[in-house]
Image (tube, rainbow, N blue to C red; front, side):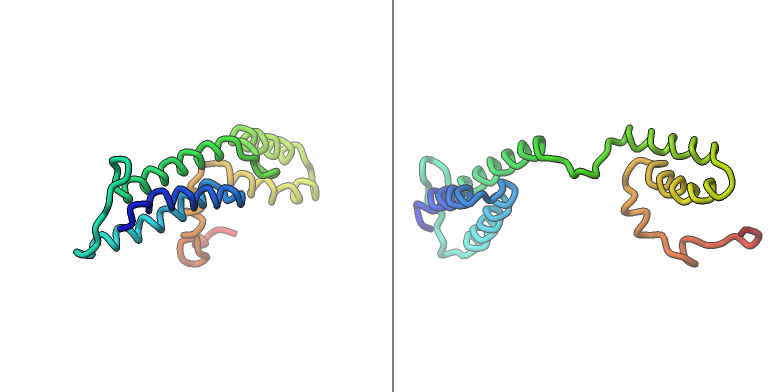
Length: 149
């Protein structure tokens, strides 16, 4: 292996950073290079050289860890989607929708029913709704009871 491989990868990460590539993407790119190193390391003729007391592979793993650490920090401060609401606000919305439904009469009550059902379905249990919803199928996991409308 080339003695300057770790330094080259570090230069590559600087190049990516200069192009405003996110830390999470940089981490993924270095992970790919690490996989290549593992593959090359399996070849008996490939020799891993040291630079500054670390093997090239160790240097690349350290660079990936640093990129992952920066990516985690970036996630703490990134802007949330404008449609995002907290779990507490979602619960309060559900309670307000139920209150409005109970207070409504006639057609207005029927119009609110769908909203109440949707917000209740989405907030009655904490998330892993994705896995549950994926399993729901009409006439399979969702079946009409014989005496129901």
